[in-house]
Image (cartoon, rainbow, N blue to C red):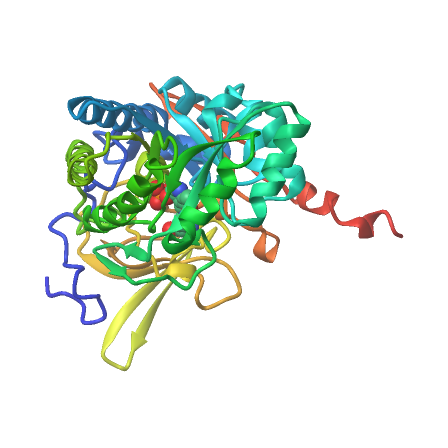
Amino acid sequence: MLSNPLAPSWLTVPDDANALAPAVWSANAERSDSGELVVAGVAASELARQYGTPLYVVDEADARSRAITIRESFDREFARIGSTVKVYYAGKAFLSIEVARWMNEAGLNIDVCSGGELAVALAAGVDAARLGLHGNNKSVREIDRAVGVGIGAIVLDSPIEIQRVADAARAHGRVQNVRLRVNSGVHASTHEYLATAREDQKFGIPLSEVAEIVAVIRSHDSLNFLGLHSHIGSQIFGTDGFAEAARRLFDVHAELLASGPVPELNLGGGFGIAYTSVDETFPINELAASFADIVSAAATRLGVPVPVLAIEPGRVIIGNAGHTLYEVGTIKDVLVDGAAVRKYVSVDGGMSDNIRPALYGADYSARLANRSSAAEPALVRVAGKHCESGDIVVLAEYLPGDVSPGDLLAVPATGAYCWSMASNYNYLGRPPVVAVLDGRSRVLVRGETEEDLLRRDAGLDNR
Ligand code: LLP
């Protein structure tokens, strides 16, 4: 079959429009003998019948195993260079009480960036000493609560926060561990990175101001300085950007060692994942080995000890473990420029459950979930049901041409930054999240009903 001229150049006509690309789908996603999508032994049609659609489905064993793999890989590689690693799961990717427990049981720490995320991690029973708090504008209340519960570390993002955290620590009679977020001037996204003298963005402080600010941190008896923190971006492939950031941070790290201890270095998160079959990712063990090489080379170059490394991956742990199930409602063949047809397949969710295509132009893929089909592939655009033309779930994909109303579609790799960025636009309730494991499913987060949405509207009481 010839490719549709409306398809982007990277998207080719698949030999089999039912195939599940292994790098994109969760480890336990497969087609049953009847051709249906089954995740961890639970059929898509069964999930849709039990919970409705749209539905977020998390492959529990896969999420746990990715968390363990990343911790073990980094532990092994940093043991090789005589150091250790603290892996923080970045809760902003997706946090619920159970997921916090999974990460805790996998031996990960958890990074939270608001009072709400902190509350979820604490409700999960995670020891506060294993949590880290981020944010460029933590409120005084958030700081006070975090210090009060004994949070493991707070990442300071601006000079004004030093006094706030020091005061809270003194009030609680504690010595608070802090890191300092720096702006390395390295900004990476996907395959490319930019390195500038100073990035024009809200996070962190410039490297040139670090020495002065660390001196202020060290002057407070109620603060204990752990080291520098850098996060250069998200959905990054390869290690060049991290290497450049590490080199820049290390020069300052070494300078700081002259005036006091600097036991740790935090290089943040941002490891990229496959959203479509053409995304080529870096195996975690190679990533861990490169990080160890980068850090040990930098330490050797400057003649300083290898610090404890901290990293904060989110997407790479939970992204590919999650899928979204939708039901197809309407289908329209749209003739574009009188030349080619794009099939618009509209589903019962959209930008309220996955804002990433609208916000970032992010690419996703999709497959028929309730059945397979040998029909000739057709170029489709999976659209949502919102009143907005940019409400797209999958910009371009080939699906079997007989895709029909009532079919179920599954969109893989929606485990990160979909539920956590969901909204109630057009008064759609946020969908439930279910975990599947060994042929069974259970709710992680209930879906919102119309009643939930109306309950918060004070107009009901104002009649
Ligand atoms: N650490 C810090 C300080 C961060 O700001 C982030 C993400 C992470 C760790 C985790 O990054 P990850 O490993 O998950 O890429 N909403 C965007 C991503 C924003 C990420 C913000 N910070 C998206 O949907 O692509």
